[in-house]
Length: 246
Image 1 (cartoon, rainbow, N blue to C red):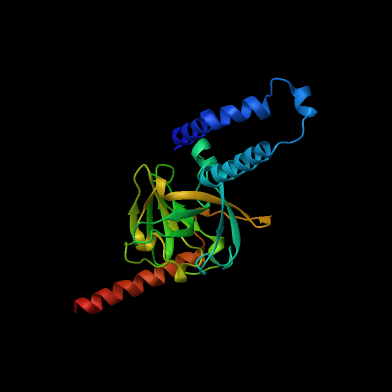
Image 2 (cartoon, rainbow, N blue to C red; image 1 turned 90 degrees about the vertical axis):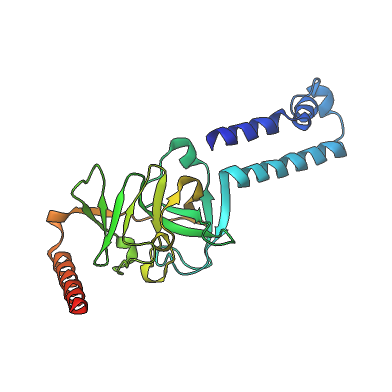
């Protein structure tokens, strides 16, 4: 992706039009003579064209605006809010993190729609949904940790059609909406490839987005209330299974 961006920008500035523009407008041979010369229409046209070209390049590779539809990111983001999306920095610095809010595209529909979701699983992670909670297993947490998510406002995370265990490959991410009961996300589609992440949400128009981050709790240190809730739900599930078997 980085090489593609660099190549496109280089080709743009090396094209014949840009060479003429640099020769006659940006770096004129006789600047004093130019200062006393009336502004020519072609120079105005050159300026407009270069301005439009820069806007197109910026929108294609650097930043884009996006209007949020739906309620899947409540209460972090509201429906119809306008967002500014950073499309380039995470390609350059490779700094995507769990908890980042991103724009993703999915090929699960013919429209290849764009969605705003939060990164929950990173490459190499194993994410398990158990008893309405999300657990993380990876090389840093081989025994697993409970991901406490303040941005969900205490709503349960239920498994959906893609299952309840996600083992992510080296270029895969799992995303979910903050409004879990009303979000179509990775629990429906499964993991997404890195090239399906279009950009990272950095601003609401006109103020920065406050992005809350997940908190990790060792399973042995899990809050007693959460422990009791998980235990009760697992016992209920076990009873239901036994009843069905009988």
